[in-house]
Image (cartoon, rainbow over all chains, first blue to last red; front, side, top):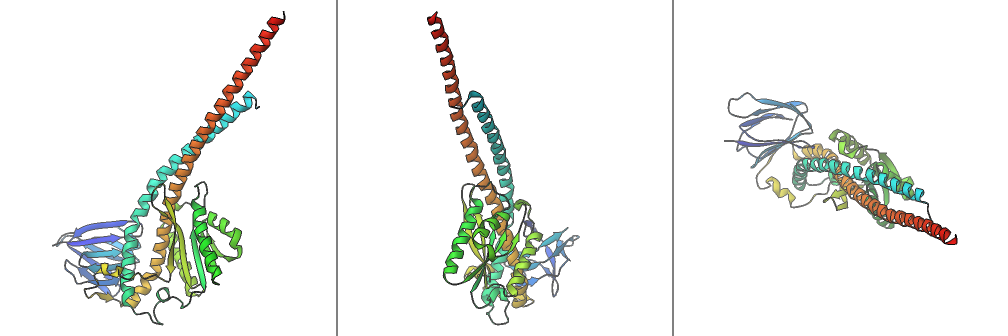
Length: 86
Length: 293
């Protein structure tokens, strides 16, 4: 059970991985995305943390993103962000 | 006929020119590699954003309350040409080709009775356009080294352009830049920047069949994404330009190096002929002197 996760900035493809879950800071509240999530699109809060869980129960990796936009479709989760800070 | 010394000096000067153009060619080759990598790296973001924008835009019905960047101002009387060139020359016809395309389009639009304004990026474009359209240039930007341009720089220009558009300074904006095909070919290209040109059919890529949930609703997402799309297009154009400039420079410098080589060969032949003529004259003088005795 893996979620295809891509993080793209205007300058490069920042990250492209298979992960367990990603918690996305949506502008109307955080939401977790697992594999098989229903299709959705959301804008993101500025300077909020994106949490990436590589496996179930693992400590999340946190990335601060700004100017972002998330899209979930049958291929996985794509986050477009203008700035990413580890 | 030029003296031997003068010829020698000319040969040396051409040789040092050749050394410089050769070095410039190698520098351009190194920069070109980096520029193409940067251009490729910025492609995924631009493609995804474009797919998302056109898929949402195709669902939203254009009404009076929809964002101006999508709906446009309703007429097309004033056109803005965003002409992206570079600050530096010595790159063959790179800048000239972009300007020529812009000028041709501008003249065509003016013949139709529309107004055309210019927003130039790059010193060379401004200089060349001001010869014919001096009063029509509303703003000029000097980007410096195109290879070092970041998203933050471009974002500011995008915001400026969007503000001017919202204020009603112009109805349609076109972006001119040079598309990098390969080292030998760079095509001057024109795309519509504002309002967003929605290409029908492309939206299928983002799963139109499925019912997609929007947070917040489509209109708000669009209002958020459209200004960003302008900046991304500008970044893309400048990245393509950076690669094209270096490609064009490499070809130009390669030609210059070869021409210098030809020139050196020609001058060397002339030098040798002159030297031999001098020796022959000297011999004739000696023989004539000996015979006279």
